[in-house]
Length: 400
Figure 1 (cartoon, rainbow, N blue to C red):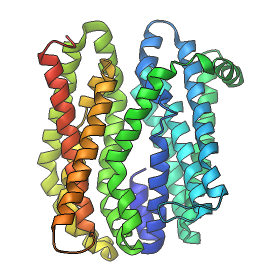
Figure 2: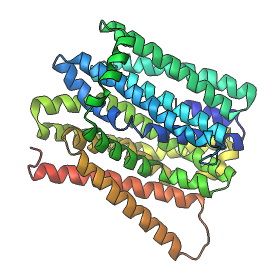
Figure 3: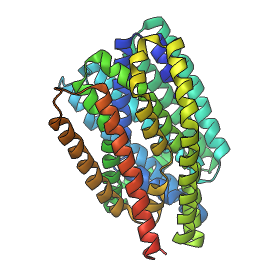
Figure 4: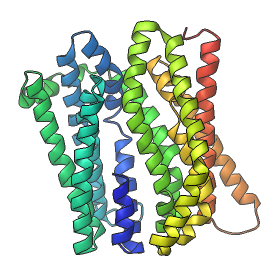
């Protein structure tokens, strides 16, 4: 799925790639709604429900999450319906990007079941199948049409179709009918623990702001071609975030099970081991990866050579985002509110510091490197802050 972005950079011209990247930005940001927090609640609780023989209740929650995602998309589509655009996109393209986000969100919800049941091979095969279909058909569309909106639309249709197939097969596997689960989900949606879900929504939105504020502001302030350059370099960070999500698909359920069986101390040990190990590996690989990426861009993407000026801060930000599993520990141990306040305080404070630094310098305006350093600053703050809060809580015995 990340390779396809590099394929798009080859098949689309720089301006269209900028449109495609802005569409993905809107799509990814939509997913940060996380079904109004219900997806995060589902991810935390479904492994426990399955272990305790309450899987049907978990499946109903899964369908409730998909329903809420559809409602969120319907509300957001009012913006382009009124003729308003965003992130440099016209209203029609914004509408396509929102539905693209819905397709990604529903797919994430549909595959929560395989992750939660501790079936990483099945989950991997689901993602591999989607990656092959989406990459192949979107590449054909981009090659024949050269249209970023049409390419996004094709990706949307494929993801929605695969999600529907997964949901239907999943229900049948557990002796249920998808239509029945959907009806029960609708009737019982008022019973959802919305208080907890809203806290998770706050966490997801604040995390979205931290992860994507640099690209949102860059899309608004940089010229279209320069934003395309920045988005191209940002593919490295997107790959890191996607790799972290793939790793967390196995790590998160393991942490949840360990917490249920052995308590928070053992959970902290595992999350710390994974975080430190992945960060160490990322640091070791960063230098050869940077050299390889630089050579690859000069060889195959000469139009994007200006993006190499921000390669190293982007790689550093990617390493930090790849290795953040402290947040999973805090969420599983019931410290979602601490995590929310951490994200809000650090995110707003670091953004204010960045703006202050820009205001003090003599050069007018903002440049592409400015946004790369913002991304790195936020990555350092959020990774370090989560590690500090988790370690402090554990040492004090708060979560022991």
